[in-house]
Amino acid sequence: MAADPVLQIEGMSVVYDSTQGPLTALTKLDLEIGKGEFVAVLGPSGCGKSTLLRVISGLLPISAGTARISGEPIKGPRKDVGIVFQQPTLLPWRTVRDNVLVPIRAQRLPIQNYLAEADRLLELVGLGKFASHLPRELSGGMQQRAGIARGLIHDPAVLLMDEPFAALDALTRERMTDELQAIWMATRKTVLFITHSIPEAVFLADKVVVLSGRPGTKVLELPIPLERPRTLKTMASPEFGALANQLREMFSTLAAG
Ligand code: ADP
Ligand code: MG
Image 1 (spheres, rainbow, N blue to C red):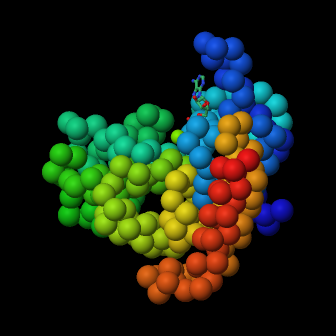
Image 2 (image 1 turned 90 degrees about the vertical axis):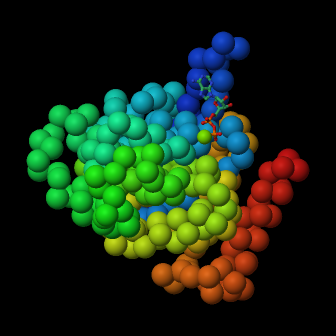
């Protein structure tokens, strides 16, 4: 058990009412994330990863089991969750700063109380000079960094990231992974990070959770005891290779099964 659990999921199943009848997306899932922990979730396409994030943000009801944030059952849309999507989804007519403030507007909180925090976060994600720019003036990686600042603006209990770097080119993606580590080390947020990439998961996470193909359930939970900050040297180390291999082997078992 995590020392100070922020997210607790026990025996959770999620069934969609699809046009083809009931579709079980997740089944008997157990997952616990402690305060300040960075957890990566790996799983084949369609195994219910986005479904899991929808449940945690309170947008989708569960069909069985329990799901709690800070001890409270998740019942409806939650304000204490931040989300970073695969696409930056910035409003094109708003400045970068205003985009970061979108969750504040949505929650009808007083904007002026968050202006300094928006600028602090933009500084943190390396966009200090771009606060007054429009999204189209930013590269894909920069837009995604603005998305991370937006996810953090209301100081959520948990930050959910759904394959946030999947739409970026390979080089930008590597750089962003490194930057996300720096951002996380500076904020120590509780993070649930979804990815398709084994090296990305091992590089970033304290713990990697592997889900089986649909219906998704946890088939492996692998602690990543590598020192931080992790660097290119870490990635070249035998320890890193052994952890990545363990995950690869799990995937080949899943594919064969
Ligand atoms: P992942 O993010 O792991 O690729 P999803 O969570 O998006 O997977 O979807 C899990 C399964 O649930 C898929 O088989 C998908 O087709 C199905 N699904 C997702 N959303 C809905 C929905 N609104 N209605 C019915 N089925 C859905
Ligand atoms: Mg998905």
